[in-house]
Length: 174
Image 1 (cartoon, rainbow, N blue to C red):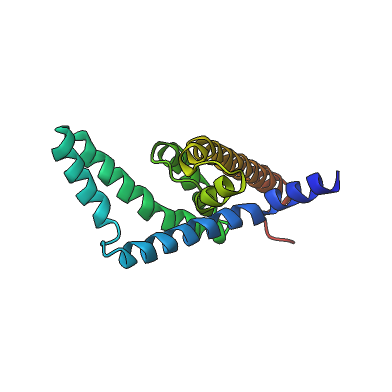
Image 2 (cartoon, rainbow, N blue to C red):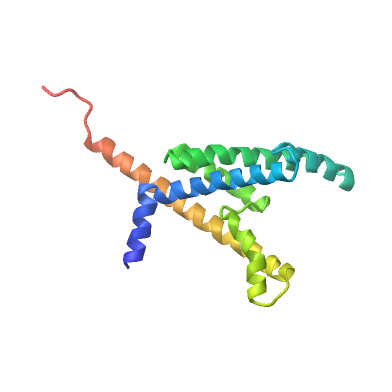
């Protein structure tokens, strides 16, 4: 019971929204560092991969996928910053990103992908089946948690704002 009320309070006051923002910024920072370490240009590599896939598979839709991936990654900077600042627009942008996160397999809890080899070693299985099973589950659960907490925060923020507006008067005192 106490855990539930603590989570509700964090969701209501925007602490969980800020945590999702921090995770967005950490994911973006990790992406930038790993891209540079691998010798690729951040964001441009999505466009280059899209063009290469379009040539390989002879379908121009891959170029659009490259653009979408680059724009999604860039929008993580905005959503992350606005969520850390507990701005309503950050929550809305985060909700708009959800279909793209699922379609591009870009989980909010990005670091859990690094645990897959450790878990497969722990259970004495090969990494491929463990990744094939755990990857989609982790993606769906993390995005479900993110969406639920952000929607809860946005609704509470809207309800709280509406009740404040009704009780506060802007008329000057006489």
